[in-house]
Length: 514
Ligand code: XMP
Image 1 (tube, rainbow, N blue to C red):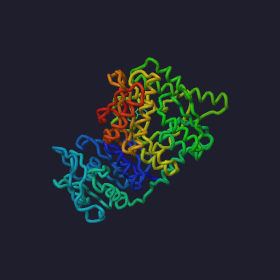
Image 2: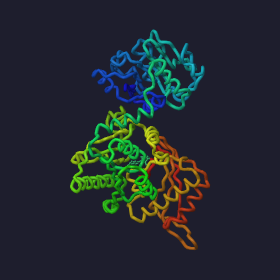
Image 3: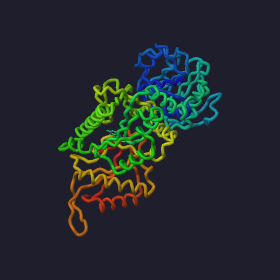
Image 4: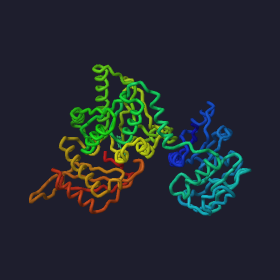
């Protein structure tokens, strides 16, 4: 299958171009400009190229992009991409004295084909420079209310340039405009669908057929979908290990029991609670806790792998992981080029298995976004509730019990979390929030319980809305829900006298407290 290459010039919207393209049926992959040029030199050829926006200015960027323009494939340039097109083909780009950010009204002045797009639309702009004069042969198809050229097109060369961002939701008819590029300008036919997505993932697993594959199985959406697809190919050669680190919620234990009963997956429950508690004893610094939890996972895995090798003569060759496309792209992003961005939290997954284990990675979902994984999960008949579960972090309650972790504090968070989820379900609010949890604050406050004085700890409710966890807003929930949840936690959870609500967005707060 030939993909569209999306060349990332550092726009904050690059991932959205891929998502929107796939949504309307066209497969696309993101790459850096260096990778794009290398591929061209290796004689690889996409079915089209999309040049993203970015913070650069053609007045400073002296890179030679002619190999891209001379390839002869259809090209869409968005924002900075449009300026590169104009510059290359002999148009005039003008330095912007003041930027244009946010909503703008533009006029559709195209002679032809943009039939589904009304004559005036609201679009999202974010630029300094702009195209003043289009190159020879290019027709102006969109004009901005302040006279700036918002879209140019050369049908014979199959090139379209847009000053605004069709990939963001704030742009009216963004999908129609992208569809115009793929169908009318590039004359491509749809090549991305649930069926194709499943085929691509399946063929990734087929490459390792016949090998023994180990899956670090959390029961979350990604590992469940990855394991389900892998199992269809590998059958009993797939072994799923679910590690109980003692930092799970009641619902997680229940979920695993259900999956063990209702799916054909071979899920082994590995009870490692005591080891985790022992390794975490006396540790209260958040980063150190995260690192210890990550390292203990590896310890448990290594032990299990040896056990299989020694006792059952089973040698694992691959580690199956539910890695998603955003993780892959993040490591490619031009933002990362100048060095790593500051580590906010050391996120853990079992990707860091030591080399001595000699396990190769199998990552069938590595080209997919979360919403695509959910769709895929439904396509392979997994239950709606399983593929639409809230995310739960690898270190579990370990990052929701502030400071040192004691079995007593685990109990308090488990019980309050259970109440929170019962109330979310009772009041039909589970899907009103993207992620919801309780945090145990290690402070004591005075309260009254019965007729006596209580001096006990505090539970904080954290409920957020987000699309990918990168940014988030706190979920605005009905007072009846908050009141009932708070009353139940203070009445039913021993050791808690006070409940507070976190109303911090991300940024500046992160979603988890540690
Ligand atoms: P933060 O707290 O960084 O969280 O705003 C963003 C999203 O990531 C989840 N999270 C993790 N997930 N391993 C994971 O698999 C981790 O170490 C980890 N830390 C945070 C968090 O629950 C939220 O959904």
